[in-house]
Image 1 (cartoon, helix red, strand yellow):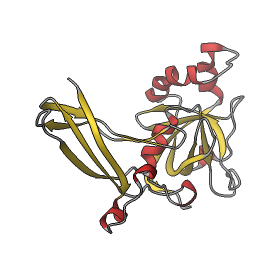
Image 2 (cartoon, rainbow, N blue to C red; image 1 turned 45 degrees about the vertical axis):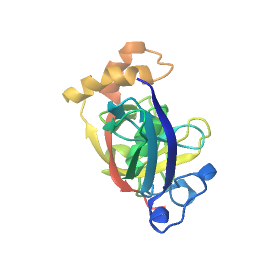
Image 3 (cartoon, rainbow, N blue to C red; image 1 turned 60 degrees about the vertical axis):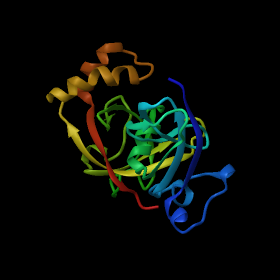
Amino acid sequence: MDVRLTDVLVADAKLLADGLLQPEDDMAVFVGRGGKGRIAPFTVRRSYTGAGGWYVESMALLAPNGDVAWRGNEQPITLQGSSKIDLFSDDLTASPTDVLGEVLKKSTIVWIEVPGPGGTGGKAVPAWYGGLDGRVYVLTGGSEQRIRGLDESSQVLLSARSKDLQSLATTVEASARVIPASDPLFGKLLPILLPRRLNLRDGEGAADRWRKECTLVELTPSAIPAEA
């Protein structure tokens, strides 16, 4: 069925409540100073026209470079018919964790900062990774990448960068725990990690090497954003 979006407004929810509208040709939602912090609540007003009935709507927030910074859940909407214009309005918030997940879908690298004297020295270092159920899994040690202090830390900072521009998209706190090689989860993750590791000299044989010489760390992003 043919459905047309006839009008859309995206604006900072607070500005809208205060009667301060952004220009229609400059609608934007900002992510704090310098691209850090929470995405402030924003309002999306949109109008549809089309054949009457039930439809499924999905909304996405795009970064300036075209990356999907946030994607909302699918939701049902009802249209009254092609002779009507149906208006919908929602106040939404995209968390830093949402932004991290969307950026990492297109990336091969995550940036990790391990705090403390035995960590990465106050700097975020790049690491290849695998992902499962919203968590990030990183191998460290042996002849693989070495991330200082990662296997001994309980908390780290995770950052995602735009794949095209390498600009910082978001930074979030994440809890860390080691996954023992004997844990069934280790074996479940191997088919995810193997194709993510480029230029493997030993192919699928790397799985045995990882079990013997590497440490697998699970990083669970928090809904709390890192301090700017």
